[in-house]
Image (cartoon, rainbow, N blue to C red; front, side):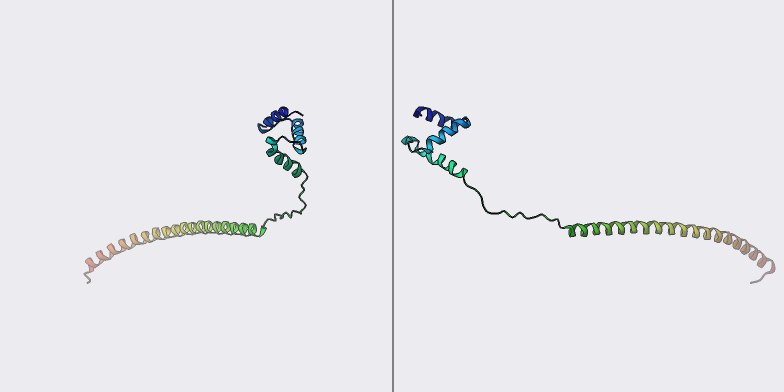
Length: 139
């Protein structure tokens, strides 16, 4: 290969414009012992690419299995259940208290009405008593 062609391919390679066939020509040129002195610096780069292609990772990789901690989920679900039951119980107690209050108010209104009827009757009796005392002159 002539040197001018290699320099053009190298320029295209550095601009990322080469094809795979052109890159193979560059690798073949730089892996040979006859490299131009001003292009020796690129020989290490292409040498690294060819040796790194043969490297293999031989260690085994242990992947941690991701077990979900369902215990925390059950604790959270229990707390949500307890809060909802407590809230429902409080609302039920409030409704029960309002119902008892309404029944008590109704009973006291009925008692008040009956006592007012008795008060009117006692007022009439008091008027009768005053009139009787005037007639009979009792102290």
